[in-house]
Length: 332
Ligand code: BYC
Image (cartoon, rainbow, N blue to C red):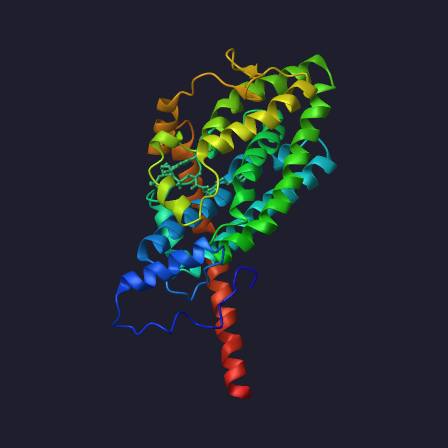
């Protein structure tokens, strides 16, 4: 399986089981410091395992919940070409969810447990998917901005210390690059179209800009997990630094499109070589993460509905697997 990469050395056997946990922890950290990958059957501290299950699980849920807002437009895409592209993109997101659930499963949690937590409203997923997609231009804005932000966040995750997560990210990033390009191209067509199309594109940018800027997570000062995740090399670049990189590459793209970023305080800072942005409304971010965004309830309701509707597929797949296993047993 793509995400599996079991270390056939099967863990660190050189330390007797009764020996000090501290020695194992020191060896584990030394391996990380030496840029060696941790594989599923290597010894790892419980905190490392839990952090990865949390982050990979949240990431997988984001991909799956993220299919909703865009999938909403598949039947209303303005041409067959656009419909085909959007279908492929939404299917890609589903695939990303699968790679990620599989990567999390190598840490000893089951996909069913993770999905149950999501459906019970106990697991987080990205704040960005709690905003509505009200016009066709939102499909362009999501590809350009949301996938653009996702790539910025995920490229460093290709070097994450945990092997299965890092390997899953390589493929995810390749597909996200295609998604970002299709979003930008869609925006370009709108911006070069009629005045009404250009207005739609600007309106989508106005609504998506700040939620995308917040997607990178709380400021470094308020990021509770960053310090430890950085020591473990799960996180390679801080939330604020990734946010800044995203803004620096996106502002010239908006200028090329002839669109205005909805931040009156945005200015080029010659001395640092960065675009400086205005204040972020963290109260909005906190409300969305706490479950009180514009679409949180709707997104969960939808996931519960499609999960229930898909029960027959899971049952059929299990029955098929059981039949094949029985056939293999009787042939042996
Ligand atoms: N939304 O200490 P921090 C995609 C939470 S998929 C909600 O900085 P960490 C795409 C955070 O979980 C996009 N919650 O945490 C899909 C933590 O809460 P808990 C998803 C957020 O983990 C389809 C608390 O705030 N990408 O792009 O060090 C179509 C404190 O934060 C958010 C990933 O998941 C948020 N935005 O850093 C198109 C990437 N931000 O768990 C596109 C992998 C923070 O303590 N994840 N929180 O209750 C990561 O890189 C990191 O988990 C984060 C947060 C940078 C997101």
